[in-house]
Amino acid sequence: MNNKILLHEDISDGFMINDDPIIDTAIKGGAYFIIKTLWDFYGVLSGATYAYNNTLQNKKLTNNLKKILNDGQEWEVKEYGDANETPNAFTYGTNSLYISSSLVKLLNEREAMAVILHEAGHTNYYHVAKSIAGENIFMSFLMSVLIFVTHGQFAAGLAIGFPFWWLYHATGGFFIPNFFSRMHEWEADDYAHKYGYAKDLATALTKMGKYYNANMQKCTSLLCTIVRTTEELFSTHPDIRDRIEVSLKKSKNKNLKGLFSETIKSLGINPLKFFRSKLFRKISKGK
Image (spheres, helix red, strand yellow):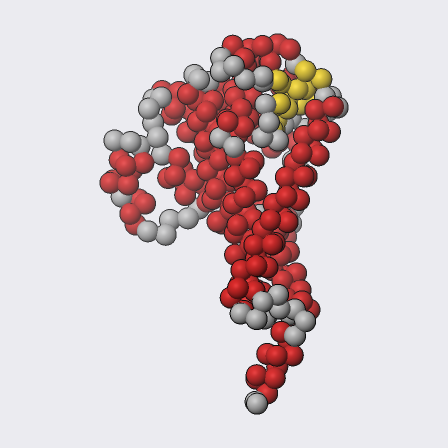
């Protein structure tokens, strides 16, 4: 028996669940997906419970949202923080939507409702669940490849996997999960658009953008510029200027489509000339 075979047996010994390396990899990859997904949903549930119990209902926004949607669901808009809080709004994927007091103060009533409708879109399109499942499917595949290559050897897998894991999270999950994350943002924007709040969302994003720019520390070094550019490149959200532009277009043309092309554009990717063709533009706009 040659050294290669001995090495394989030594590495595999004690780490293989099944003698067949493909089955072994599938079991471990599947186990990773199940455990990580359950853990992520537990984190979301814990966060949602804490947020719900530590925020107050904004009755005016809640009642207005129910009137606009009129879907029989028990929506609730919860307000948190104070005037010094960074303006923000979010959802855990439930019918409770959260908006900071500072954002309520920054925006007028229709602009605030446009932001709330964006968050309602995330809930109604199950974006939180889809993001968790999508990211974990992607990571399970990568982990399975890593397990297969290292023959299930824990130390070797850790040595290779940890830098890879750090790079994955440092870059926001590379482009594949980012593509779907940005698609979700476009869909949520479109949810506000279809209720007649496209222009209000554009002005809300403009005000938020001005606030962030005014309160963001200016870069005075090359390193800072590189870091900030990298953060923007791998951001889970599309560029706010693109979102404003699309919202303004939607305010003039409610039938405008093209979420896929906008997502491609926001990622800075143009892999095929087809994406720049007149045919693609017509298809993406539903013409």
